[in-house]
Length: 256
Image 1: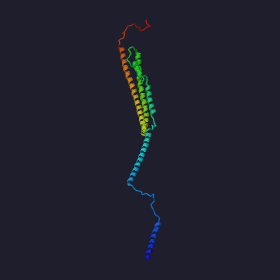
Image 2 (image 1 turned 60 degrees about the vertical axis):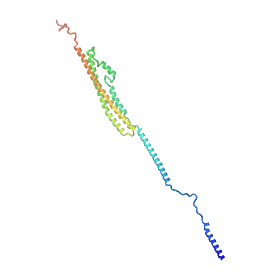
Image 3 (image 1 turned 120 degrees about the vertical axis):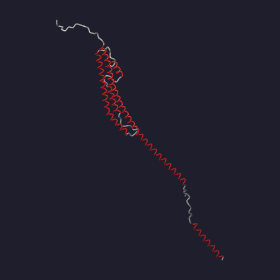
Image 4 (image 1 turned 90 degrees about the vertical axis):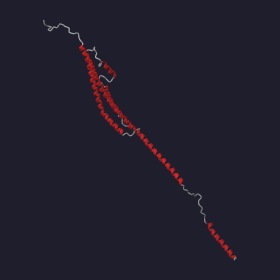
């Protein structure tokens, strides 16, 4: 019996050794030391997404601002573009033609000193000491002044009428330039030139009114001077003379 117990103990020891051998020989798998767990945080993710959205919105706003600034610069360049058209020379020529006609006024010019001198000598009161021949010469001079004034008025009218065609051409060109203006400066310059055209037309109208007024004034002045001269001639006619003085008369100088 003792032998049986010993045999059983030996068998148990051999079984335990066989069971322990695979464990000793098998490798031990341990997780790597650098491995980490990824933890998903919804709050942090939402915050990061909101921050990225705001940054993208700021970038878009900056791009829009730059685009607006570029558009503004382009508009400023257009607004500063000068009008490639000028009617100044044509308008000046029209004014010069009208001014030249006014400067060619016959006999009595558009000058205050000349007018005052003429009314002192030619259109003043008839001189009681002037001879009949001098009175007739004065009346003829006044008539010539009146005729010259009427002719001057008609010449100015003809010159102004001649400017109408030039003004029509310039007005059409300026309106076209104003409608096709690319910026504020071009539109303003076209508008200023249209105002200059109106000023030139007003100058022509003023010249016509002045010429017509001058002719009418000369006509009225001639009438007034003629009435004054008529009174002087009537006075001389009605003034009693020395009367009839008898004298000898011979009808036949060679007779007996």
